[in-house]
Length: 278
Image (tube, rainbow, N blue to C red; front, side, top):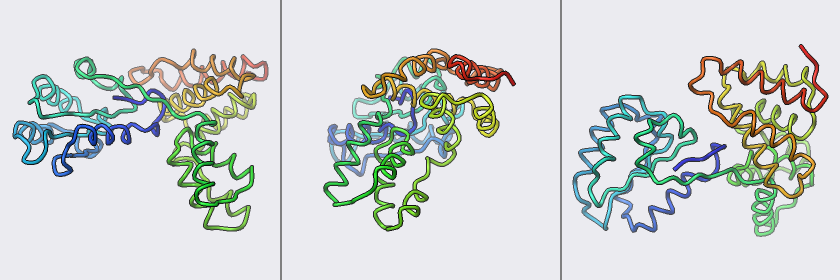
């Protein structure tokens, strides 16, 4: 199972819901962050545990989050576990980069492609909490919460809870920050899709994020997808579609991924008739 565009689109939440529906006893539910446990030794231990029947309930479940972070050797080893599992063993693989998994793993999984929420959906989720908790915020604070959430209702609600604890308007705005490491990428994507950002402005932001071209690409895709799915954003459909068209392919395996990002960003600025050649 994997999120198509965004890191915070509910992959882990959905996985936990599936675990509950399977009737798995909490004792036999293992949640593993593959950024920390990613090698062949971990997989060997997992494989041995997966052959032992559960002591409670009908099954055992492993939620392997960020599974694309496993080493090549780890992925090869986990493939052997997935090829012939015991009938009581279930494996849920959560990833925001399915193209980093070996094809043989992808071919043995049932796929659930998730997307980030649109701004309209995030607003609705936050409004429900505002009404229930009697939280009153100004329109510009609300707009900042939604924009900084990047399609994540959880992030938006956490920010709402933060601002509810302070009274000053300026202080509330200062509390709301984009997801760590994504501030410039979000500013760049929002600027191009919604504000007709000129190339000199984009160039400065790009210089700060060019070391993570694939992360920036996914941010662009998330912003563009949200725009196309939002009925109120009709005037931005054209540029949003161009973003999806230019950035739909993965750059993980490309030696020219930085150049790809720069070229795509420059082309988007130019396509709006507002770019300037560097």
